[in-house]
Image 1 (tube, rainbow, N blue to C red):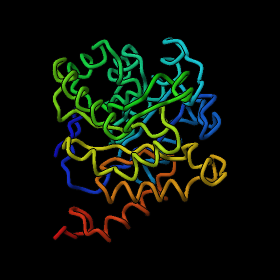
Image 2: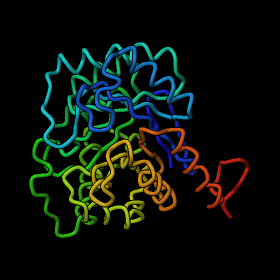
Image 3: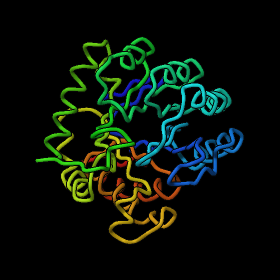
Image 4: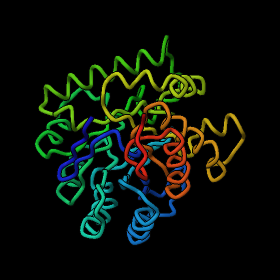
Length: 286
């Protein structure tokens, strides 16, 4: 299995890629606007690369439940300076976390190589055309509704089957827009239009999504469903986040999106060593 994202090319099986999160927002649930200043965001991204991040994911608009949308101009003001400063400093792909095609286009021009689209349930094909034309990687994430409405009353008859149907449609529709399958990453969207039981079911049946032969991204770091289980504030959710990351790596995840790169890297790499995965410290899967 191969992932192509502009000048970057990854072949799996290999150690899971770690996607480090940089929120250039004043209202993120996870870090409370700690990296809203562009200089602080750049410094944090460089620190995450030093810790072992294989991808840096930069977002300028919060997608937490009930988040208030921001204008295109404001999102560009937040993210483009960060991407421009990082593009010449780091040797790993930069991902732009956005739902706006215009922001994705500008980010790619500034040096981004991946579009992380939480609104992949879109009906127009402008975002896919931008991805096709640029050769960027594309993360297609499942979400029921939009951030403003997604947690109102999400209902599924079978959440795994419905997410799989979404992936089938995404692969077909993006291909018609000119996106090559090797550009696509699939994300089940933990916490996006899902209740606690939906999130747990997606994790328990993670291997059900490997049939698409595309890299699977897990985004579970510091998510609020952990609070529902353990009464843990965002800064206290690392242990459960690591457990989910290791579980997903064991059951077929290729990319782990995380706020805590150093800890996640150690936990996931240990899991891979125990599983005897290909490509790590000379170990090969028998």
